[in-house]
Amino acid sequence: MAELGVGPHRSGDIADQLGREVQSPAPTRGKLISKGMVWSPSHGDTAFTVPLFDQFMKRTMPEMS
Picture 1 (tube, one colour):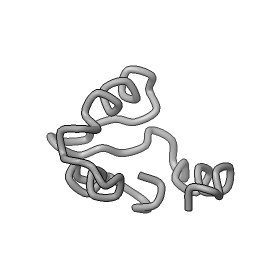
Picture 2 (cartoon, rainbow, N blue to C red):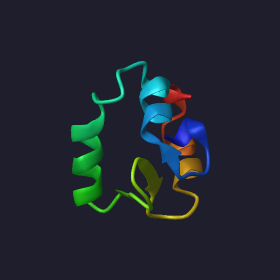
Picture 3 (cartoon, rainbow, N blue to C red):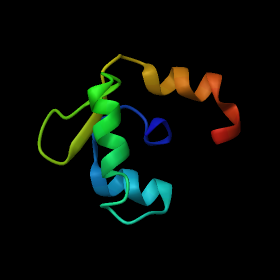
Picture 4 (cartoon, one colour):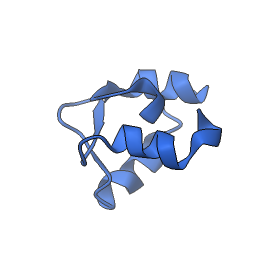
């Protein structure tokens, strides 16, 4: 998601970025929602709960870029 930039992002776009089918990341998405790291502002959308978290992820995990 961090690679996609400021969200929210469609579930299909996230799955494409991961190279997976659209249903595949759903369990991980659910876990991240329950931990409070992401939220769903509308059906099928996902966004980080903390502003600028995408930039933080890029700085702390440069190998993923």
